[in-house]
Length: 254
Image 1 (cartoon, rainbow, N blue to C red):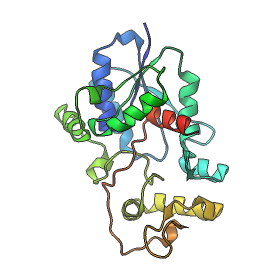
Image 2 (cartoon, rainbow, N blue to C red):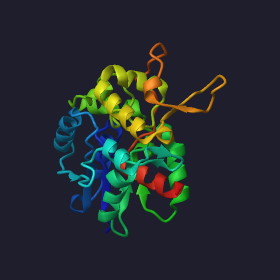
Image 3 (spheres, one colour):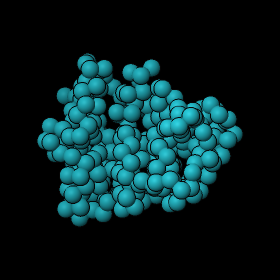
């Protein structure tokens, strides 16, 4: 019988997807995987421990050693932040770790929610021979449903949710836009500054943000030039940054 690989990303959706999948599978063939990233909020480790108890499994932690599991260090040493094929951090901090562990025949549990069915369909189309299940989509569960289920289980949600952010990605996730980074600058000035510094060190090719209107529309600009009087949005809808979906999406983009 195939192994079931469940990705736990310290978020509500992956927690519920893992809970559902584990209960329906031979426990001897289940692995719950977590990529430990230094840039995540430290409360994620508290949520990790709470979910281990709730799900009743010991999770396997994957952690990069070359870059200290820190996206900023990846950007600095690779002289690159993100582009059409995704962020530079995804490969060394997630994809490479999974590839070293994955075996032929493994079934991946994807934490896509009901709102993300299109992303799931893209995955299936790109990887028709890969064995995957998406229990949240199968049961019609949204991200808000997952948050409610975690709370009803007596588990406090991760601190990033409590602060108003839509997900529990790394702090200062490079997938964010201007409104998101204004919020990060207010709430986590040290992480904002670290990313702004590595942008500056690499140069214009590394700029994350771009002008959305006006004569400079489409041109990129550094974080340090982000306006202080624009709107702030903590719940900006960022793409989820799970171990499996991020790995596959970068693979088929390349």
